[in-house]
Image (cartoon, rainbow over all chains, first blue to last red):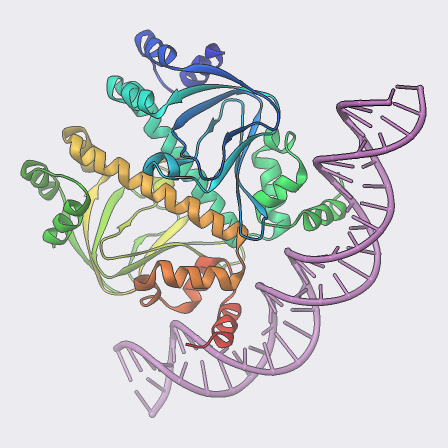
Length: 191
Length: 191
DNA sequence: CGATTCTTTGAAAACAGTCAATCTGTGTGG
DNA sequence: CCACACAGATTGACTGTTTTCAAAGAATCG
């Protein structure tokens, strides 16, 4: 499975064979069954996980018991919860495998060690976080400026692979609308 | 004005006198009048700006001509637009001074040089971006899970200083609700 | 003071959420 | 293979929230 990661990282960054060895030497491969949780609310998240296959969702449950999807993850994405990771405090979020999946896992300790050993990986890591912030910025703009229907079509277009993998009621919760509203948007815009 | 920045950065990070000299030597102080723009839509943003006094807003105008406030900035905050900054491409955003303000300005070139010269500043910079991402994560959660009234009270409590400085219709546009709705929330919850 | 910006208000319309029920497809166990 | 359970998706009727539009009050600034 490491080859998938190798191909992924080489798409955007120059990484030496030594650096790849460092990365490979400290990660473990993990198979996750459908419905299994990588993180449960209340636990501290201290991993760096790269998805080589499958699908995850990061969500939070409010006081009324309603789920709100913070993000999805599919192959060639990372799945993390950075608030808990950064502050070593119990997370408000859950991370659930929506399908059987395989991931590469680095512990926080190992990952930080790698960052201190390899400037190239450190650069990659910085760019990764930069892109994550940019995605958050774009999503915030959509959430404050667009209607339910506009958000739906944007999501479908921006993340077609995710869209085709996850149940619609989770898309609704990602967009901040009810599943019924999403269903009606679909009815009024067939195909 | 540099003393304000010095006090700010020393609150959270150990910074040597040499590093402070590097920072000081490459920044310029700038006074901005009320209503003046640091960035206009279509321009490339290539600065790193620390606010020593005053108040800014970063917003975007949609096709219907409606403003959407991406964020505010007051003293001891940074004001940036990272998508344009990272990719050196024309920004979709505007940055406007809501009051007369003073800022410390580093060019992107200088800032990157500083980061390469000083590991301590690099660490500070990484932490800064980490906190920005965390704030974005929290905001996304509010936007997808909370009602207009809940978002309003949360904003008031979380950013009281900002709340007391900016017009209500900009708060509304930050929260993704209309100014009339915000006005009614206030009427129904006096004091 | 006059102009401008900001805030509030009322009435109507549009939009989205809730509740309860039904429909659909999938997979499991007998 | 069928019956059943279950999760997901849809529907209708209703309710509630939010927006829109138009207008009028406040507040602020030169």
